[in-house]
Length: 66
Image: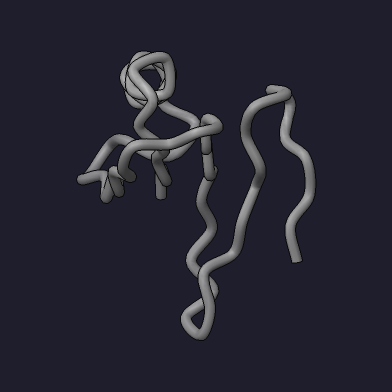
């Protein structure tokens, strides 16, 4: 199930079957997609990860931050 997140151009998603939560950002039209798999001390709510994700969307690259 997906739900709108706080930003109008992203969605909260759950990746099955493992139940991995993430944020999907998909500009239209997208020219590619990037998956952020964070390390220790970081996550999908990290301001740094979301800054990079927003810059990628401006460049027409979709992304999933998990």
